[in-house]
Image (cartoon, rainbow, N blue to C red; front, side):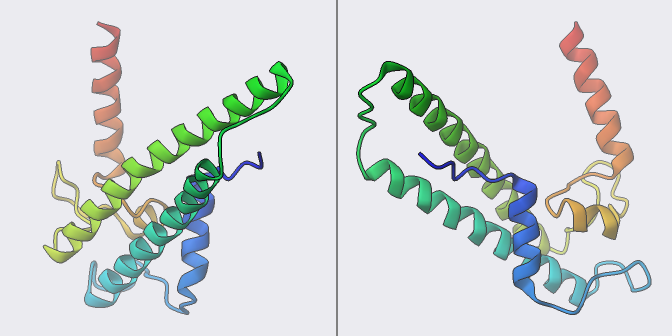
Length: 152
């Protein structure tokens, strides 16, 4: 089975190329102006479309029939590949929920602002991770707290 699994970063990069826009948000503009919000809305929608398109390929492969490898080693290898593929699709299913959440935040004019501090997240961070909900500092603090509670 050829692996359909594609890294989330590659899918996001593909979505950015699909936009084919000569516009890229910058720090020189008013933060989260209409043009920036439209850019991020289109980016998120394209990202979601790319993920759904890749998922359709996996679904089609699953529907084509069960794995019938005569050799036990080949069968085990194929089943491992399917397991990895299905975990990837599950991770992307969760990513789609985050994309939908980001689109709702755009509609409510809450996009681009930290859910913890209310500060602007920053254009560069949003371009790199359009579903970000926290500033880098708030995210680091959150991860430190999470690590401490796991260590307990």
